[in-house]
Image (tube, rainbow, N blue to C red; front, side, top):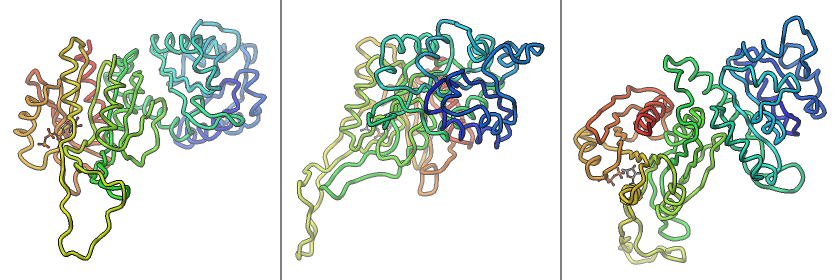
Amino acid sequence: MGAGIAAYKVCELLRRLTESGHDVRVVPTRDALRFVGEPTWAALSGHPVSTEVWDGVSEVPHVRLGQHADLVFVAPATADLLAKAAHGLADDLLTNTLLTARCPVVFAPAMHTEMWEHPATQANVATLRSRGAIVVDPASGRLTGADTGPGRLPEPATLFEVARQVLARRGLAHGGHSQDLAGRHVVISAGGTREPIDPVRFIGNRSSGLQGYALARVAVVRGAQVTLVAANVALTDPAGVRVVRVGSAEDMRKAVLEAADGADAVVMAAAVADFRPADYQDLKIKKTDSAEPAPIRLTKNPDILGELVQRRLAGSDQIIVGFAAETDDVARHGREKLARKGCDLLVVNQVGENLTFGAPDNEAVVLGADGSSVEVPRGPKEALADVIWDLVADRLE
Ligand code: CTP
């Protein structure tokens, strides 16, 4: 833990970790204890707390802590601590632990916007990421004092989720590639667009955004830098993800195309409306006494996935993934759609009123442009996300 005022939020993270059965050792820097004192950490973790390598020397704590850990989670990570970690300095127990850790290391930076955006900090973050550390982008919002901007420590529940996911991935048989998206930038769209009819009404769909959010969380844990373009979702921003909120298909098109420039992969998990009302009414439409309501004329929306594929023809080797929601004859419609859309992978799932939408689990078949087909049995949306990133990572190599 670095010396940041967000240390108070880490008490809650620590509680969540211990209550879910983890054995946690708290290693603050000297100045971190100015914000929250040693007794609090000792009581909450149930272990003595030290900042120095000179305490309990016979147990060689500066080596042992890092060697024995399953996860090192640095929160808050100050600009100073990121710089020390990037350069391998080791002048206290925490920085020594970072050098001896062979397990996944997560940094959750928190600082003022200017410090976060400074090229020195950004270069240190890039160095840490290139070595396989997970650096969770800070959240945006109110900072200490009156200023606002990126730099807030994400909420404890969100950080706990990152820790849980990283630990879960460590347990996987193929844990060897847990950081296989390090250094990659991926763009994910999620949710369902709303096409306005008038200032009050819209045409929408039943997509909850859960699958897109699961893709974003899993990509962060696998080391990617993630931009999530979210249409009308009521979900908490995942930690470490740049979230761009949009409303209509046209808004989504702009945000996705902008974010996709230079991205290694784009996954279109959003349900984009194929049509929108042709004549938006500036004023609320009133019911009239005439028996027949006026029909709503529709016009076609841009096909964002199609545009991504077209733009790629200009030479990039971006991996593009589409989703298909089908209600019947799923396999045939899926193959046809993959051929029509021209993307690398198409995730086909069967939808219905009580299937997939808003549910925590999903089942799908992922079709490849190379003729491959991977069936993913019903399970958590994170499990499907993992399979999708496995297939993307294979193709990026
Ligand atoms: N999509 C898109 N832009 C649109 C419509 C869809 O980018 N205007 C993307 C979706 O995000 C999804 C994929 O295209 O990844 C498939 O969407 P779908 O609506 O199922 O495909 P359609 O080609 O519209 O086929 P149909 O409606 O006939 O099933």
